[in-house]
Image (spheres, helix red, strand yellow):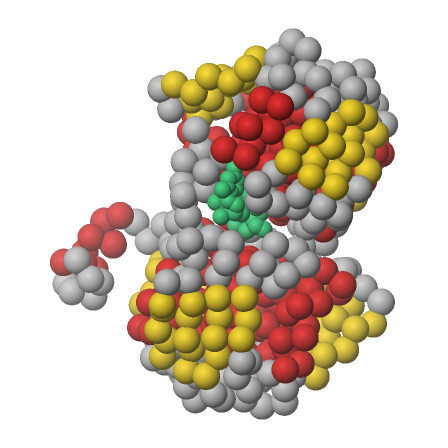
Length: 434
Ligand code: EPZ
């Protein structure tokens, strides 16, 4: 288990070039199976989730060469359509592979992804969409078995603009016979990135970024070279580093328009926000002011993946803020951890009432999920003393060497590995709750 020791009290300042987008890279990697020629991908972040996706592609027979953030994926040698249980269990978003494996091999067999720390994560919209394309789906023994010799284009109306379901159906439709129209599609920038990649490979996809995406099926695509978009959630997280520590942080090589809802909140908090080309700079002007009301929504609303990090900032703001989480039903687990650091908040169903405090103090806390863990790192940097974050490996799922980035900006994070034995000993001595 990874343990991060975060020393608070320094104002973080400097410039960081943001990593490639985890949530764009994962569906694009799944899409590689649709093309039976080598594909070059650039700006693919080196994080646990992408590494797990590459292991799954290799288990299906793909050859993958990685040099830093550049990849060559060749699926010509792929023959498998059964996703490995352990890896797919750890990477629940491997469910996107259903659509591309089915389109390529006319069959797909995957473990049921199950829920996670932030919610039940059902996949009914995925499966109903694939059935609309004439896939036959059988769910038994914790696995999903799809067959579809002749996927046919169809109109698919999503009951909710699910990001993963939109992507899964796009992938399945690329080589289907005829036209597929997805209505009430998710509009996230990662969907646009996936469309751009698919078009670079010769597929016919249009409308991504709007609620209606149209795919004209073609027999097969061709190789391409594609650069994955910057990660907008990591961009927002790093901009909050400056705001919460009284510093001055610039993030470069990003797409400022994809974090505009966060930038307007930071301005409301009293930060000085400047956008210049593909760079964003956030300068703190002292203790942030509280922000009246924020609610998470599908894009272009405020992103749920930045809710925990904003929660941390509002925990030290001057005044009371209200934050409503509309996307996932259990995405406030960081609230209790922040309370251990002296934060004051009350959770009423999907709404948090956050009363900012002047100063947090260091504590022993647990990262329950990826973005909640990032929020605890932010809070630890603003706190008095040291904060020990347990299960920091969950942060490393989506952030490329976040500890090194923070240390380069003047913060202090020390990474440790804690064995099960050491953890047990700390429980025995009472240092950790039983
Ligand atoms: C993607 O998850 C992202 N993950 C999530 O980022 C992100 O929070 C989410 O989109 C929303 O933006 C990746 O792209 C790998 P959804 P996804 O399907 O596709 C319900 C991170 O931290 N739903 O849009 O799983 C679901 O329960 C991660 O990087 C159904 O009811 O999100 C949830 O309440 C966390 N039935 C809502 O839709 C379905 O079939 C949003 O889910 C599918 C989803």
